[in-house]
Length: 129
Image 1 (cartoon, rainbow, N blue to C red):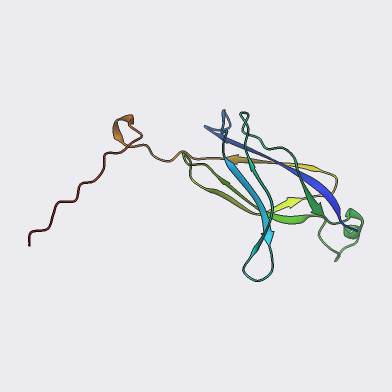
Image 2 (image 1 turned 120 degrees about the vertical axis):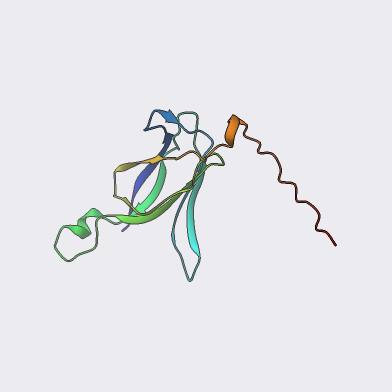
């Protein structure tokens, strides 16, 4: 009988010093064919965290003997924010009865020179005909 574990995601930047709020967090696993089964889509709060996400995990008794099932379930994690590079994690392990905390370091996207976040448009000159 499947049990559940929980997953909390914490997004941050600057070596875990600054939480990133407003990041989209997607938890999924492979589904049928080329599709993915999505379990949760959340947005990080002001502390950079999500609410605990309850996910299925195998009964830990099934892993008590060698050669038996793994004591965890695998999930995929995608964290995206418009100001940071996309972060992806595969084979994220969730154990039954355990709250897993996944820290996600986000790397800022480069800013245009001069500190102006709105880059000047490129003007394409007309071709001589």
